[in-house]
Structure formats: structure tokens, C-alpha cells
Length: 122
Image 1 (cartoon, rainbow, N blue to C red):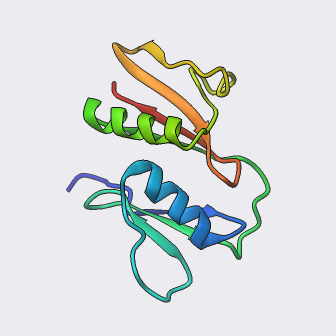
Image 2 (cartoon, rainbow, N blue to C red; image 1 turned 180 degrees about the horizontal axis):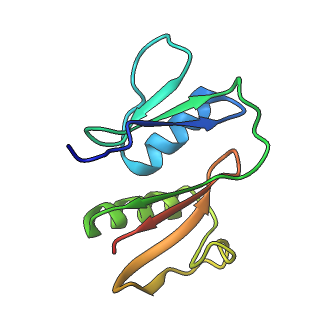
């Protein structure tokens, strides 16, 4: 059996708002339910579980490998939302895409809690 990541807990100031932000940008849905977490199903095996009971003390980096079509959709939603993005983790507001990343494209942006999200095609 291959090892897969099942879920990760994401600290949030407002778990519903943070889950809706992430789901909206990535073209996903927030799972319905009244549990402790606001969950977003990322793929068959992974959920992002937003929890506002955990303090947001520092930025966490989350990286997502996506197809070219998914990249274009996510990038388009980031631009439409007027979110600053950039070509590197230390240059994530320069409004440029890294088009030389391992033979693909990548960009970085912050979510509403200051976590750094990376989207890459290769």
C-alpha cells in the first residue's frame, strides 16, 4: 500500500471563512457538516481541515501539484479576486509567475490567515 496523506489541520482565525476562501480559489467545495473542522476535500484521499481553536502563530507553507488546466483555473481565480501573488516563496507578491520551475509553472500567494500556498505544474 502506498502511503498517502489523509488530512492536515490548518489553523484559522475563522474556520468557515478560511475553508470557503481555499475552496473558492481551488475550485472545490467545503464539506457540509457540523463537526469541529471546516473540511475541504482536495482529492480522493486528502482533506484540509480548518480549525479555529488552534492559534494561528505562524505562516505554514502548503504546496499543491496540479494539472495545467487546474493551474490556469486557480491562477485566474487568484487574479480575479485581486490577490497578490508571486514567483517565489520569498517573492510572493511580485505579481509574476515562475515559468522555469522544474520544466513547469508555479506561483505563490497567501490565504486569509497568512499561510503561503504554492501552486505548481511540475
